[in-house]
Image (cartoon, rainbow, N blue to C red; front, top):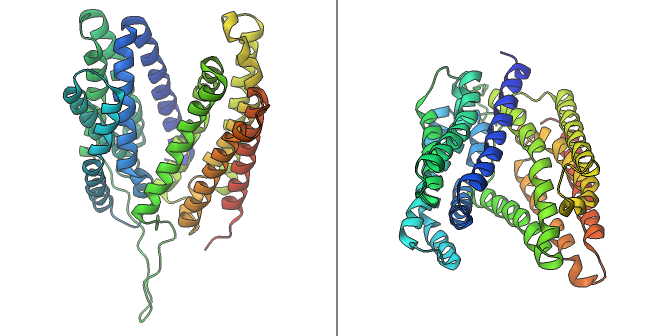
Length: 400
């Protein structure tokens, strides 16, 4: 099956997964009380960051290191990730203690179990790409979120006194089902073998992730801090309403670069292919879809489809569309650093980009007259330029 055919299936599955996650959010608001949703959200967020730091981009390394056998690479990734999961347990416990939720120990158990099973699901997705059919890889992405919606809906309607446990159960079971794809292996993808002439050293694989575990963890932490700081700074500087505008639009428009990354670079890494020209077109396609989504949001505001309290959203649409369009182009070329011997430089450059974002976020500390609209243009404009510069750099690098 061609890369485009596989990409189309993965794109549909990724879109279905994201749609199911949005529906899960609507079900929470419909069937569960605010205290129940609040407790679940805190536990789920702690679990997510626990899982993210424990993995330290292991799924990406698993796809990039195609010269290793899938079984060998998976065992190595799971072994190091579980070790980090154990080491991070005190940090997660401290975060849960700061949150001051009731029933500390049960919630810590839920957070740890969710983090471990979600870690399995995140590894199962690249595993299915490398060792399974396109259908299996698509199902690995789409089934768990859809199952979570079904379980959450059933518990909300049939077990009305479940509280946050109903939501925690839905998330945990769905992650567990997703992790079961680690047990499936329908067809192997042969790892490329380096040919070595007599008397010469073995040839370095053309595609690999040669970053240290520490650098991968630093990259992950920098991404997490920059992503979280946007909303925290916006709420602190401009209030909850302005922060909600940024949060809603980033959640909506951020779906498109997420789908592009899941459906294109990951597929190419699993096959050891580059497709430089086609990658640019995939990025432009994602950017076009992002722009259309922004136009749809502006039209909905103009026609009064949203409540009047959301009219302030209009000023944020254009800058955030610009930012996420650039993110689509960047995402479409996410495989190239690992195929061009740039993995370590790429991580350092990305950490530098995150540092730039944090610096722009801190502008209200020095420019006290800066308003939220001017600030979002500074943030979105600098982010767009940074992402485009990174894209040109990785795409223009000569092959090794």
